[in-house]
Image (cartoon, rainbow, N blue to C red):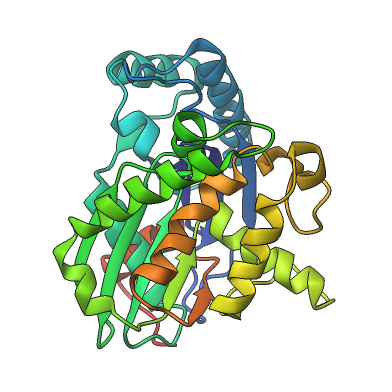
Length: 314
C-alpha cells in the first residue's frame, strides 16, 4: 500500500493528513492531526519569526514526523504558507526544521495556495459559480470560480493573527479599532478589480476562523455533529448575528461561546472581520463552508499526476 501525506504549515496552525492510495473510489483520510502553533505571532514590521513560535512549530512537526513513520512507502509534501512566506529569517528557519525534524519544507506562493484551495473545494462540493475565501492566520486567499473553472485568484496579506495584533485590543474591541480595520480592508478589496465579477455570488468559506461561524451556528441549531460543516450553508443574516454577538463580548466571555475554540478566542474578531466585510462588499446573501482546502487540493493534484487516478466530480 502506498500513502500520500500533506503537512500544511500555516500562520496559526499546523495540520497533517494521510491518505492510502487505493483505486476503489474517493481517498479515505486515515490520519488527521492538528497543532496550534501561532508561527506568525509577534512577527512585527521586521517580519521575523520569533523563537517561541519556532520552538512550538518544530515540536508540532516532530509529532507529525513520528506519526508518519507508520506509513511507507510514503509521498510527503510539507507546504508552508503566509508566515514562512513573508519571514525575513525564512532560510534559517527552514534549515533548522530540516536539521531537527528531518522534514523538508516547500514555501508556496499565495497564488499557489489559492489554487490548491480551489482544487480542494471544486473536487468535493457541487459549486458552479462562487467566491472561495480562505482566511488563515497571516493571509486571505480569494479564488473566483466561474462554471467550475478557476477564473481569478489572489492572496491578501491579512489574516486572523496579524489583523488582531495590528488593529484590535485583546480583551474588548474599541469602536475606533473596528472602524479602522474595516476601512483598511475595504480599501484593500477596492484594489482587486475582478471582485466586481463576484457580485451576488455565494462565498465558499475556508480557514479556522470562517469555519468557526458554522460551528457556532450548528451548536445554536443543536445539530448532532457540529464539527461536520462540509457543505453546510448559512445565511448572511445568521453570520452577521454571530459576529455581532462575538463583538459584544470580552475575551473571557468569548472563550465560553459554544463552538468557538478557547485558543481562538483572542483572534476570532480579527479572523471573522474579512469575511463579514466581504459579505457586504459583494452583496452576498449566503455562505457555504468547506472542510477541504490546501491539503485536499494537493491530494487531488497528486492523483491527477499519478497513474490510475482521476479527479472526482461531485
